[in-house]
Length: 560
Figure 1 (tube, helix red, strand yellow):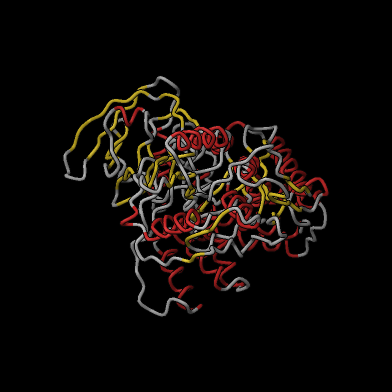
Figure 2 (cartoon, rainbow, N blue to C red; figure 1 turned 90 degrees about the vertical axis):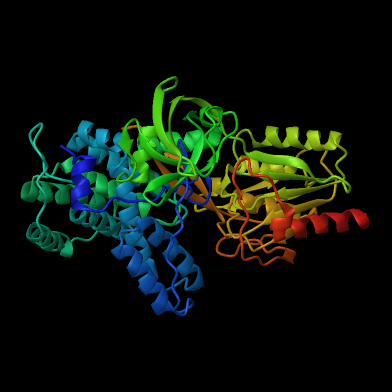
């Protein structure tokens, strides 16, 4: 049987990072229920921050601490400086394998799948994954690399004691010894040394042979071994493709729809507890007077100190109308118990709608994400500001990781009168498409768009479209540079899914976005970042980019 969370904690240090994922277009920011974001490292290094040796040393330190989420983020940033450095690429992939492994085995839907799938069903699942990857991924397949990465995922799972021997019901799991791991690794090298993988059939045969060997040697279920190849087949394709457990797939759908069943809080790990970063308006948490800055000490009597954030998030989830008991500590260290009822929570994609300058009638809104409701929410915000006398508009997409391609096109279409909004190009001709502006009427008011290094994907589509058509002045910092489109593909067998990169996208003038980003017209350098969470009040006096955006809006009105 799979190892329990408490048993596994004895084998390896629990992860303390929040999960990442994306919705069709976007950075890997995992908006679970409750939503979650990766905690920033408290570590500060004083050596030369630009040298390759220092970057590798910093990454090694995070790995030693088993801070795989932070290590993954660190290597991704380092690769932006050294894009073709093989050592960084290898360590990034290793960090991703560890990070994804922890997330999968902390996910109850994944554990249930291991228990329910037979060996044959697991092989059929692997075949389905390979077919989808071969059919839709943006690049041609290298079957040898897919199998090699599957083996690497398996070896990490063995060393992390994530997959364990089959035990009788009620018996404690027996750890795999270092000698056993070294022995099976050598046997796996011998098994694959002369094996050439040129086709999908070859890949399936190699995975099945590996599962049979590991099961015979270690007593590990063949299903669990095959599932490591399933994870490896998608997780190593690029930074944005991955396997989605059943629960993760449902979270993706919740992001797309902009609603979920929960209590409505955004969390991050902080000092052996769960720090509440923001509270969604009109949510159960808001109704219970839970505030940003509070900490969750326990969930239904279970302390959060020794839980990974995925485990804690799993405890916070539950069916609609079910009850949840939390122990909450305020910033003043006052502790109280709170009883909440889970219900549907609507997550706004448009926030902080206001006249940021009453005298000049400068409107402001923040686009949090691009989801199904975004076009409607934008319309409501625009008309609200119009009736307040708006003469110009500042749209803030800083920190917006992306979302739906269609939503980005719809929003840009409200301001671009004609021409192409974005073009996509993929390996398959069906992925090649030019998205045109189609609205018969558009908003013609002066427009400013705020961007930063965390504006990604769908945000970049919108920013590039209004910029290339000379409809907006871009203010802030160069955007992230995630110029690819992902598709979500449900898997028939188990309720899980795949996220696969299917195309690259290009601005109206044909400029690529990948690894380049969108450059602002007005560059603003700032050392202190403003708080950009749902419900936060925009404060120009503490936000240099917002101040510069307001100045740009004034200038556009003055010369009109």
